[in-house]
Amino acid sequence: MIKAAVIGHPVKHSKSPMIHTHWMRGHKIKGQYQAIDIAPNDLAHAVRDLVRDGYAGFNVTVPHKIAMMDLCDDIDETARAIGAVNTVVVRDGLLYGRNTDAFGFIANIKAALPDYSFNAPAMVLGAGGAARAVAYGLLKEGVPHIAVCNRSQVKAEALCAMDPQRMIPVEWGERDLLSDYPLLVNTTSLGMDGQPPLDIELGRLPPQSVVCDIVYAPLMTGLLDTAQAQGHHIVTGIGMLLHQARPAFEAWTGVMPDVDAALMQKVLA
Ligand code: ATR
Image (cartoon, rainbow, N blue to C red; front, side, top):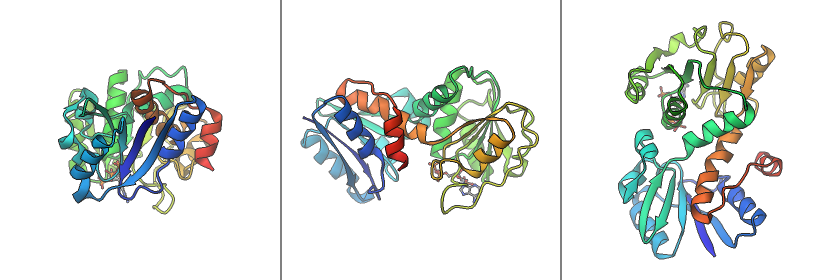
């Protein structure tokens, strides 16, 4: 019986239990995957309890992704570069921290656009945790140049320290100057249900560009609607959520699951 969980605060709206339970059933793996609410002050103690109770691992969501770094016995190169842990694998009582968000972002693009070759410069909007994972994934794929455009310029500059040779910060007021960037990724919360829309003019985007939004509620954001209407390729955000869960599931069951249409429908319902 494999026990896994997602820890966060709040966590009850997490889609992870639905995703992992779908895969456990589909692969006939005996296990349980729960959402466990842990307040920030209780994190260290609650994690010790999970280890004691025989959990094979757990996913980590807001607000614990950074704090979890200090509690791991080992952190892989990806999580270290991104500066956050979203997956913990427990082995022999030790905690191995990973980050699967970059994998999820890249795997989602590859699933949506199998021929995409990552050889064009990219503009990333935002400089928070999600932007760090997106930038790391793009750099690993060989994207030659990334402009990071964020409301707070200081955070854009900090993110560009990840690879100063290939990254430059761009002022938020210059986000419409897209003529050199045939890959555009929104990692901000703008456009999400309950948030202001993302105000951006796509007129200078080169023809047939790729536009990704990591927002998935709504699935078709204003950015994606506009990009599609203008003939660009679009990549919705739900796949990043689903694909980032795959290596975590593999870590604690040994099975690398697929993202199928049934799962996609369940998560969007
Ligand atoms: P995540 O971990 O999901 O990336 P985050 O770290 O809170 O979340 O980052 C949210 C991003 O959305 C940031 O880049 C933020 O810009 P700032 O760094 O300037 O705060 C961006 N964001 C949120 N609301 C915004 C707004 N009204 N206008 C512009 N950018 C906004």
